[in-house]
Image 1 (spheres, rainbow, N blue to C red):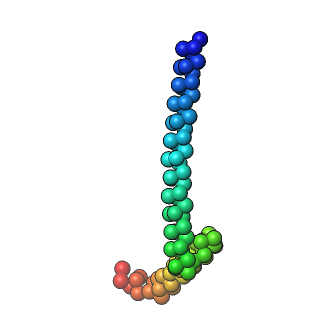
Image 2 (image 1 turned 30 degrees about the vertical axis):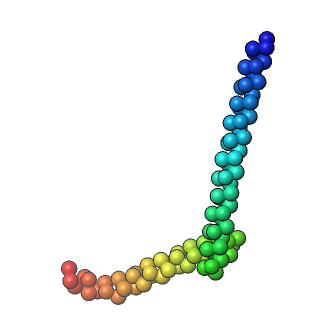
Image 3 (image 1 turned 135 degrees about the vertical axis):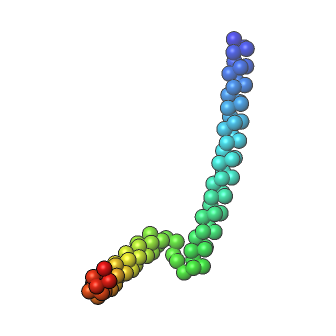
Length: 91
């Protein structure tokens, strides 16, 4: 019975030590991630962007992009319409 308890104790201590090492590793990763986040947020601020409002800024940029593409398409259609008689003659 003593051997069984000794084995169980050793197993429990090994597991505890492994978990403690894992916690240290995870704490290091968490600290690194926090540092990286702080740097990225500062880069955003340096560029005049509020890190907490990036979604709204992205939405605005996507709307601007969609409008620019629509404008380009309209301009191309207008040019095609204007050039249509000449294109027919060239064929």
